[in-house]
Length: 90
Image 1: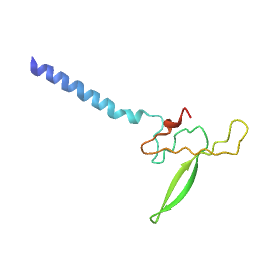
Image 2: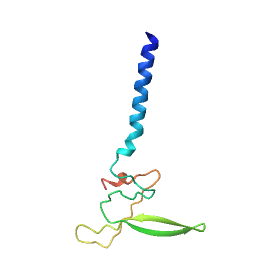
Image 3: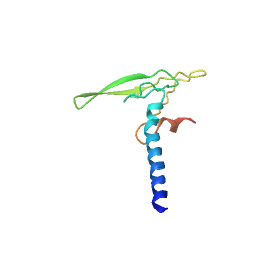
Image 4: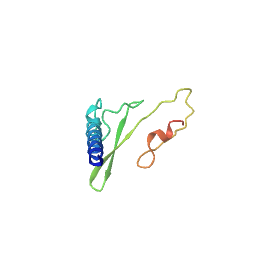
């Protein structure tokens, strides 16, 4: 009886693992290494940076003011330890 329960549990675990392995294939569109396919709220631009003989690309969005411009600029950075959602309330 104990072996039968273990077999049923093993099969259930295997079924869950196989189902989870299929989840990426169910996504609408996979993102590329530079998050191609991600829908940003504003047009994104690339800024090339030469570093150690290589060219690095930094993506940015130049968001126009929603009201009257005051001549000030705000620079919000994200990456590695700070995802873009960190600035959502700002």
